[in-house]
Image 1 (cartoon, rainbow, N blue to C red):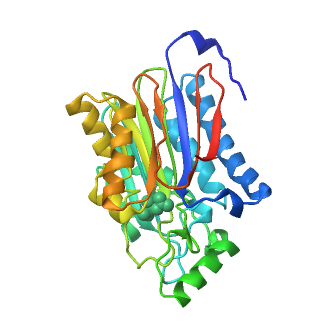
Image 2: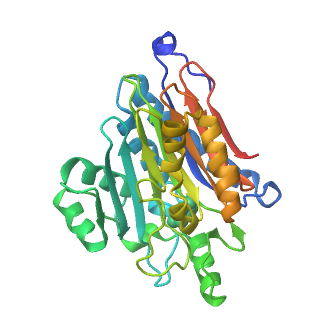
Length: 316
Ligand code: ASP
């Protein structure tokens, strides 16, 4: 897919999305499955790209792209979220606007169709940054946010993963004995030079009731600052929280004058590896440079920049 537009010769803009990182092995993947994942990434990119191409905001593009991925049952967010220990789906999401450093986040919410929309509502229509569990659900009702039944979030594959995890007393990162993180996220730079990032997840299969990962935590799973970059992470949340991954990339650029490429590589391929953490991130800087490093076997990912061919990939 090559997208040429009138804005080609103007300012830089772009969007990148991910559908999770982990032990995604080509020999264990069927062609049909691969196509579904790739289609999800392509749809998310196209949806977000159109918004910024028409002069819309990075924050709207990020929200729209993440929403598309939340609606795909194959990704661990929204509809395809994993089961927790109680057999429920507890959803986490966050979003950040790099222009004013505004942010919104929700965690442990149930039956919310699109947690990223709720996170944005928290950012724009509450006096808070972070709402959790029943408090976030009450707020969602007051804002007319869509709820869905438990049946909507049921997928046979996730159910089997949960049964397996329960039987073996395991806490699984998304996919059976293979570690795979199906969390979704997006980062974007708009024509006004504004950056935004968003992340959404069901967390970890068989996780404890009330467990919060990195995805809804501003600074850990999501961060955006117009002066540096926008970042969305995927990986083992317990490590990503302690490594404050998303903010670390931004801080290395801000305080050490690192390029996005250097900062993202240092964090993902050195700092996280030393901690024993598996995963990756997508990031875009204010010049439109995009980096998508991961230290796992694969990461569902893609990007689209003005005037360049869109890229979608899974493996190294
Ligand atoms: N980071 C997510 C979490 O720990 C998992 C993932 O990336 O899939 O909740």
